[in-house]
Length: 427
Image (cartoon, rainbow, N blue to C red; front, side):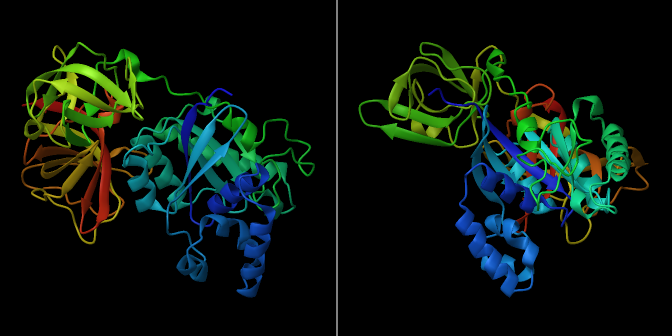
């Protein structure tokens, strides 16, 4: 059987609107977890007086979470539809959602946004939608959940009202709502999750499971110039220097020259290996080791990026970015120098100027910087900022190389903010 294409899927939305329950339901109904596991969870849930939580418990297997009835950990689960195999990133809340969205390969190709029908759009719904857009998640499926709990139950009018609320919000941040399915579901009873609901005969559209197959596979950016962030560098006796890493854009072929930045060193590709086998070409998504002629092991390191000699990776003197502050204990000011994580690099960078503060729900500018009045940022604030790396860093414009144009900002052991690069001033 041919290998199915792989996509990353994130579930977002207000706390308690049913993300974990929907994920649990999808995994159960597609045979990725067993009914007896659910029964065991149900029994434990009933004993603790949280009877409807059993699905959520599939994802929340940490004891501490059960006690609190919340999702803390980010769980990665695989499941298949007819067309794709998905890695589900179950995003508990703000901070983890973003950390996960940005770290490594878990950059989501699509998101399922949950909004519960009885409550409709809540504050966190708005923020998650804006974050998803900020972080470059362009494909969305909306699940209008808890249709069993509307009054009267399964109410089409309530569905339409919530659909309108959510549609307005999505439009405001720049989604094309004509391309987005809004599906009425009950994750708890299973209606319209994986099978058509008898309780909502008025609904003629797809189930969640079916609509996942309408997600378009992002094109493999083979037509872009090569960008190959280095994860490790090995010296192999009798072979030489072998950098290892995942190709983000472009291709690597033998007998071609590659320049590594910011090391500013050129070498020639001798051979390429993946899973211990030689391959004739490496493409985006391939994790490869490449035997490079003309470079010593100590001349390149993790965080360097390989690219074509005629289109080298961009080393930033400064860059302008749009960020969202996710979790900062006090205020974030100009001069702040936390660690920026992007591709495989981790470099301390300084907030040189906070140029504009934006509205978290609409993205409109609410405050502009003046010399007399610098802008202060707090948790929840999106902003446009100018950043200066403290040492040479390869980073690209998100519009040109999205894979190297997004970053997480970490400090004090947590993700403080996240963002995308709007423009780069080259070194």
